[in-house]
Length: 78
Image (cartoon, rainbow, N blue to C red; front, side, top):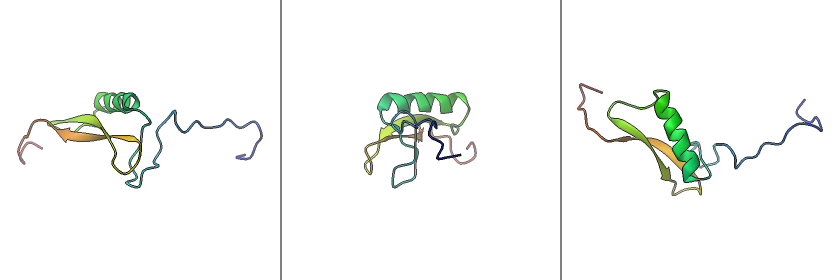
């Protein structure tokens, strides 16, 4: 039951939540975003020719991660 008195509280700054107007997952610090980027890379969530990198959002105080092209492969190899 959601209103149960002993229910644990969620620390919103400790994890990732979609608080940004862009609806992207936000991270409180660059280090947390780097950790998330590494996890995504390890699980294969990266596009060919890309690297997942953190960036500071211009619409919220959070950090986000994105696939950034580091090697242009052309249309046939993507």
